[in-house]
Image 1 (cartoon, helix red, strand yellow):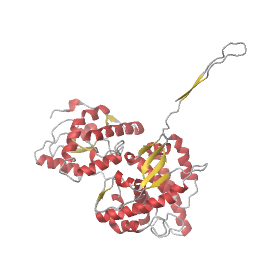
Image 2 (cartoon, rainbow, N blue to C red; image 1 turned 135 degrees about the vertical axis):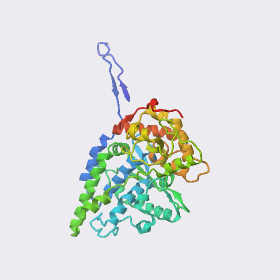
Image 3 (tube, one colour; image 1 turned 30 degrees about the vertical axis):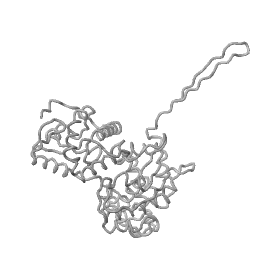
Image 4 (cartoon, one colour; image 1 turned 90 degrees about the vertical axis):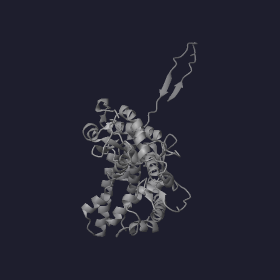
Length: 412
């Protein structure tokens, strides 16, 4: 807000003039200010390959699914790990190359002729990793870690050199600013987390563009896909070769995390076998193997997140017939807070476990807001971040709420 006040001064007859005050308010952009820019970049901007669309979609995926890794950079920008952008880039282009879909006029077979193909990419194509393994929180052995590191380096260099360099505002000037960082090759296994992805550098994104991708990804991404398909069909026609529409649609589909609850179910059953009581986080009922369900606290239908922090033990009737695909209200989440902390501590955060606590923390940092800078992620911190994400989903998507009902039975 800016206030401008005029000081009254007497006129020629000595009478005071009328004074006035102007108040200027600046409202935060809700993302709609970037929609004309996105329309221009997707539909109107000149393209000699699919790279601009690839970078925009990689950023859109980061904003929609890994916003927790982004950091504030002044009032007008967001800073995103360059490794995260490159990770999404690889995940987008690997299935396209496998399906032999042209990404540029000279790209006739697989990845031949693409500017980001090097030893790392070739190792991934040879099977060092599936493109479905290219995700935050993945734990990789030494061979896979080396392949991914090299492929990310290659992709990051290409992104800086090509699409980030040529994505400009209609009046001129780069939209995205990328900064490299000295890259150190990993030795041994690694976890694909925020620290690893930030080691490649960062990308500075205008805040209104990032907000638009966060709030309107459900419309922005289909527009990107539609234009990407049009370009590939044009390249194929120029080369005089047929294109399989079904294969193209399948390769363009972003595979969300598999709705897999096997790990938390196994942890709950193991605790039961050891004589440790496992309770429904919502009702407080003690669970048995035949009444155990694993609930996505923030519902899968609204936000497909299979991270450990989002998977809770629940009484089958409560999960399937009472809460269902609704999001817990703020009150419900607060009421269940102690039970959720108990579950995380028993199932995922045991001090003697060297794997699950790392996976839990890296997933939380990636998908939840406000945790990226934390050296150690504690249960209460994750709860606060989860409450913020709940509010964001409620505001942006209008997900129906489930209100806490104590009469369901919360006696242990």
